[in-house]
Length: 247
Image 1 (cartoon, one colour):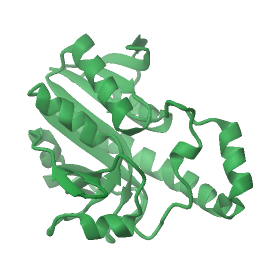
Image 2: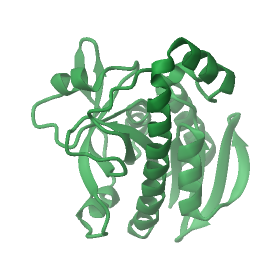
Image 3: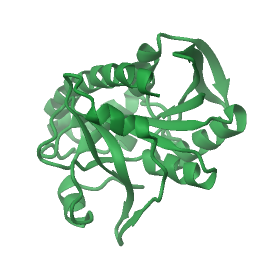
Image 4: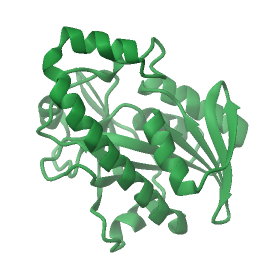
């Protein structure tokens, strides 16, 4: 099987690359990519940059260049459900796009391998949940009130819904897997796009510094999130390693 894995940022790309054991570095559609053969499958790992538009472009490039049988959206996320802890892993069982006007469900075909990972007793905290995709940053408290009733183990991130839309358009199954880097009670005092270049593909140190100078109150949060991000990235690597035999 040919599998394309879409990640947004370097820490996510590196977490998945570790689980795959490395491979051949490439450029696909101008994007950083890694190709390898693992467990009888051919993988293409792409780093899209943040947000809907970047994720959609990367997915289209992966389909054009790789013609995958399965798409995987992988990375970190924010917890909306109060029970989710830093490092917990959530596999999508429902995908919704949330805007200021409400939500729309993406009718994507999910790979059974994801739910098999949830059902497996692996020693990790792995849950099936609702992925809330947002084109802009929204507070978790607001999102929690906007989601459909019965939205269990909900998380928020900015790329999987875009990957899901392209998957539906091309009749390709999707597996979306995320590790929680900031829990429900951690409302960010900044937006990651404040740290990135214009195309939302790279974090720029000078933009981080400028944001900190304008918002010095976020310094403790940045240190805390850096540590949480490392925990979440490690969980993502382990979860992906456990997922590979189920594909």
